[in-house]
Amino acid sequence: MSRASTQTAQDTDQERASIDATNAQLLAQQNSVGNSATTGYQNMLANPGYTQAQQAAITGATQGSLGSAFDALSQSAANRVARTNNSAGFSDSLDQLARTEGQQQASAAQSNQIAFANNAQQQQSQTLSGLSGLYGIDSNVLSRTLGIPSELLATRAKVTPASTSSLKLGFGPVGLNLGF
Image (spheres, rainbow, N blue to C red):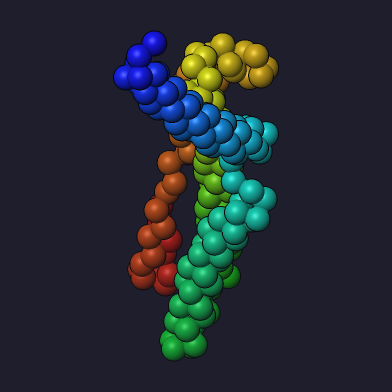
């Protein structure tokens, strides 16, 4: 072998060693990122949806705002009685407010529960899509492997909360009137 051939072989071997080292480093980084992503996806799959604390906060905010609105309406009716010194219809107005408040709170609670279920289902679907992207596996195959019916992931819940009625407050000939 000539001296030029030997130098070329050494340079080639050195370049190959450098490329192999770079490839090994990239593979290690890819494995690290893949393991982190897999762990995160597995955690999301095991615990889909809002946390209990988030659900409690959402429910509390919803119910609190409804309570505040109905408290204001009740106070308005009491102020009218005090202003006019006429309590005719006051008890009926409070009864109607209480019924309406109960209906609105039940409707809001139902809407929250549907939203919680939809969020959990959406997160499961996104998680399976992410895992299938990492491993190159069809998400339907992956869902069956994990015991989740693929039909649940393919379609969104078409359940919509019952239409909520709007509360209308007015003053008529008999005092405070409530309508829907």
